[in-house]
Image 1 (cartoon, rainbow, N blue to C red):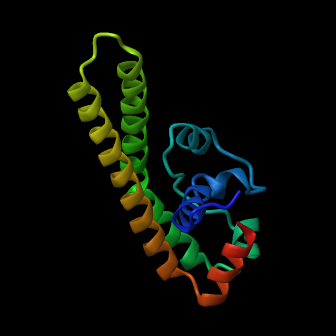
Image 2 (cartoon, rainbow, N blue to C red):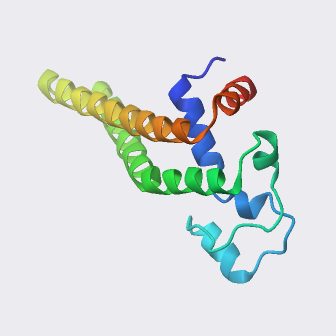
Length: 146
């Protein structure tokens, strides 16, 4: 399966979600674990390099910049995705409903399409920002990996 490039870049961003906790060999404090479970960023990065940093030769600064970009877009992407899922469910119900009018179905379809477009735009914008943090060789390595 070939993934759209914007989705690939977004995967980098979302793979940074908690990666400093999950892939670190340092013990987790209760506070750090709670922050991770609640979707918050832990306050610290691990002292040693983690696999994604090594695999793509990321500096700590690059890692922190990528995590910051992910954090800026995370809530918007999650919210839009949830709204899209709900709208798709409603569209499916309308399509199967014997009482839904054609105009109701069309309106819901337009809503679904607008949400898809919004999600694609958010993903693209976050991906474009992440791309700007990486060197050309890192971009190539990431695309080859994913």
